[in-house]
Image (cartoon, rainbow, N blue to C red; front, top):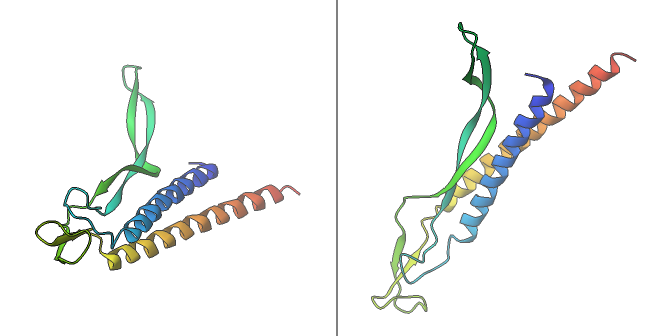
Length: 148
């Protein structure tokens, strides 16, 4: 692995944490949005991360090329954004303008405390990736200055 791969890995981490932060902000923004039916109610979303594996090509004993899955990760990718399975929050509020004929209003399955924790975690991870990039940049600059 070369030092330039560090930028790709940290960049993929920053991209993934940015998507995580955006979904968290969307969840918090919709935490108190009311609806009159279960189908129309907002559901909390979470990004699904996966390690990007490095692929290797090697030559086997018969002289043929074979593709091998690498043991080292070369970054992180967002495979999908999935909705949480937690139940929605029905509340009996017959005076609410969004109440259905039974008097219930449905609220999203967003836990604001959990979302704030996710937001702090993604913010810290993003900052750590920035620090990795800064350190790699300084190492490259010092390497270039060795010849002077």
